[in-house]
Amino acid sequence: MELACPHCLALNRVPDERLTDAPKCGQCGSLLLPGKPVDLNASNFDRFIAKAGLPVLVDFWADWCGPCKMMAPIFQQVAAEMGTRVRFAKVDTEANSQVSMRHHIKGIPSLILFKNGKEVARTSGAMEANALKRWLLTQGM
Picture 1 (tube, rainbow, N blue to C red):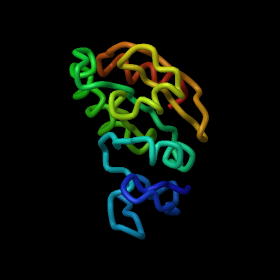
Picture 2 (tube, one colour; picture 1 turned 90 degrees about the horizontal axis):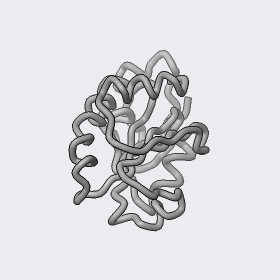
Picture 3 (tube, rainbow, N blue to C red; picture 1 turned 135 degrees about the horizontal axis):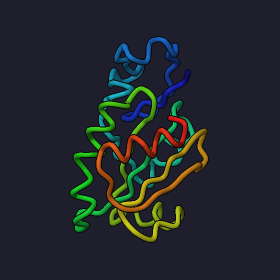
């Protein structure tokens, strides 16, 4: 499997059976699957989504949003638990309005699941951890 490094976006080949071995980027040495959400922005969003290697769940959020703040630690927890099956990323809608507009974000928090660079599912509103995991399971994760 090819995984895009969350830091330098270099593509790295990692055998599927080694995903749980904390693989590191061959270019910059960063963890490829850090077990926490990756911050995406206008300059790295498209490349990361297209080359992630695994499905990517993106949380569109804003600092002023109460439900977003409430959901942040839950998103972090689920990322740590499921980080070798799904990559987790966050987009600050205030700082990256063009990314939000392109993906038709109308309410936050909004979650979009991408597979092979394409949107396959979406949901809006804060969720507790078990509900988020159930939703991901219904999407085949």
